[in-house]
Image (cartoon, rainbow, N blue to C red; front, side, top):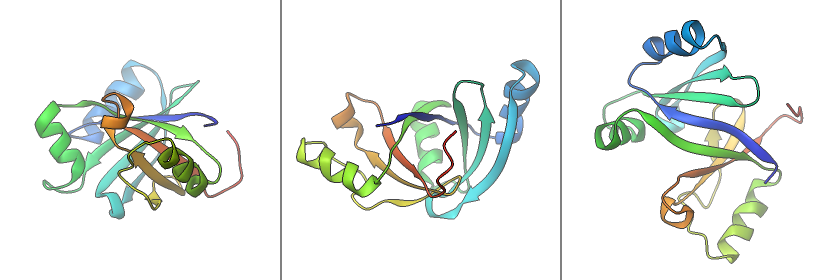
Length: 137
């Protein structure tokens, strides 16, 4: 694992949550995009030493909508930046880690992602995130 790439926060409305993050906390919204493969609208926020990823469900049956229904708005996952995501998945599986995604999926911000099952992460949903561009931030 290279570093914490971002912290994912589930919200009911990105537009409403952005007011808090930008106007109240003074952070800058970098970009907003939709990731159809994960049924989410995503806002990236530059929080100086880490990125925050706000996640809004695109439909009422999406994983973020179900998360909010069960647990309310709040921290959804912590993402670690990695190189060679498929190798990291194989290494984790060899160490007994259960994966939600054994094959990386398209993620936000031009990335490939895979999630570790929260039961393997002591109740925390961890994401592996490999940027498709070589730029290191």
